Length: 111
Image (cartoon, rainbow, N blue to C red; front, side, top):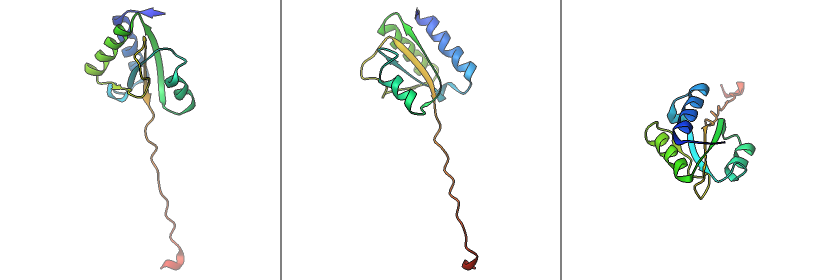
């Protein structure tokens, strides 16, 4: 379903409020279609949660939404998503880096 720039911004911001987190914790980008490389990669890898997308009327409108949410709200632009702009605007909250804990074992003989 194609929606206007204002509706798209409101839906994306509402989605972020529903899932939680600061705007700066979310990534945004555009794609030509929802079966493209970014979406395939997102399904296979654990890229994060809260993925949603909507289709704008034009690529110009989609880019205006991205510009607004990056410049005015602080979302991170997803540079690796697709090489060309598209009408589909997506957002998601990237997975945090796993914290690795190292366990060291001390032998009784060491004392």
